[in-house]
Length: 142
Image 1 (cartoon, one colour):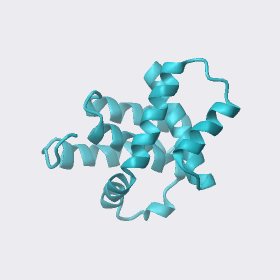
Image 2: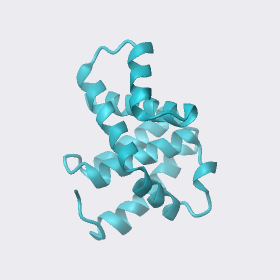
Image 3: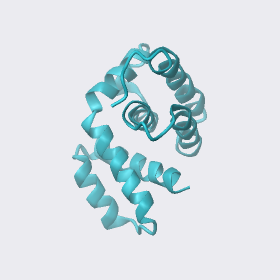
């Protein structure tokens, strides 16, 4: 549950980053300022994820564009886009997290924070990335 809460925190930080057009570090400070954080492990995990997404945003967004050709990145729902970013970051840059766990957690986030269509959309995109990029070892895990 600590990691799930951490993912929720990361999603909120990334959402703030995008809507306010600020760096993740500033969004983290705002989060700490305005929200009561009771679980430091979850917060640390959320910070790691958000900072990792920011550091690898170009790679991540290029993958999203590749697997959502009918939806330009700027037209994607902000919540869905940031859920995809988190999951893709985990799949490619966090060898300590199994890819299927990242996909399942993204679907759960989509159920909580997305639209009615979000879980299926997130699942479809991440499943395609997993089957075409991850499973076939097109990349090397860092």
